[in-house]
Length: 504
Image (cartoon, rainbow, N blue to C red; front, side, top):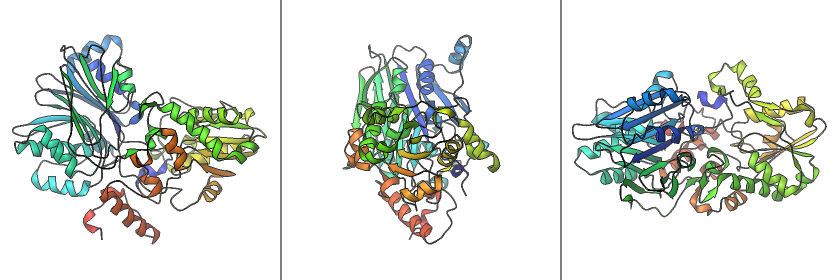
């Protein structure tokens, strides 16, 4: 059993940032702050890479460190150059031991006899096994620990055939299946970015008011913290380079379907980021209003609204506005309790989940509660929190969940890769309520979710909710593993890391 299923929290693979200063000033402060603003996208490791006449890199595990003012010049001396990229990562591919985590820390650089480049990657590749085998045959030095290595290996392989960068990127888009939003630096210091043909992961661009600094960022908060104006979201299948004249955009692969991950709206993105031109917190407020309209009978019988901080706080406010019920700020997350449960012994696991959330007891006693959360994935955390509320005297507990019921794995960068770990894969809402100890579990409808985002349903990926995946191999893998799971076969690891040659 994969260790990651021990916890109910979910993580995305990583966040990226890249910037260039055309006045040739040190770029490291921009890279540092761009990544600090996105540290929520990956806690396991971080890294910075700059370009002067060579690539200069710093990589380490854990959260991005605080840098004291007296140390900033030392960092700039170690990471000189006017162009750079950064990354924060959480592992959804490769191994989980310390050696593998260190090796998979990004950004990564790669070179051949006639080319070199560096990239920062966000996403997850589906045809990993096929590409790993291909590259292992063509390069004796290739060893796989993270999907960024597959992207960079494909790029340098194409460049070694004397292809230009644009053609190399186009080959990635046509031959690599999955989610990838990439920012990178060429061997002559050109900053570039590209996105997979479905646009599964966010990636935006921005400039300083005088246009002397240009940047790419997974989220708009990476631009905001640096005083950069948001220019545009990189389109699916688009390749973009930054120059003094501005951004040069080229659509290399056109798909009839877009598929931005819907979970970005519910959980991953910071509330003060913008997606589809709207602040995420405003969308989450609308999630709460929608839940109030969809479940009026439950609202009518409730006394208080509680939220599980912080991703559901905005939805709780929206529900409060819609229903008139008091939103009691009676749950607080301990900011510095950051351990994830999978690293603990089984007997410690639930006590750590319990410690992450503090609940003000006298507000709950004898009350009928609506507890709002962003999602239920495995159910462990939900069960512990509800049990804690019962001990504190809550009379009835009705869960409102902003993201629709998750029934299948994700292939594109969310840490849920098997059917067996998902509480919703074999249970309806009433059965989930029995398992977690609630009176009811009330999921937002897909239609309500989509309407709140302001997007078309056809432009969002709901694969984990509907079982309909935007890319072909992911669909084949999901169908195959679902059949095996329903027939009692044990799932032994991440679906997308299995040998695809064994597919029927």
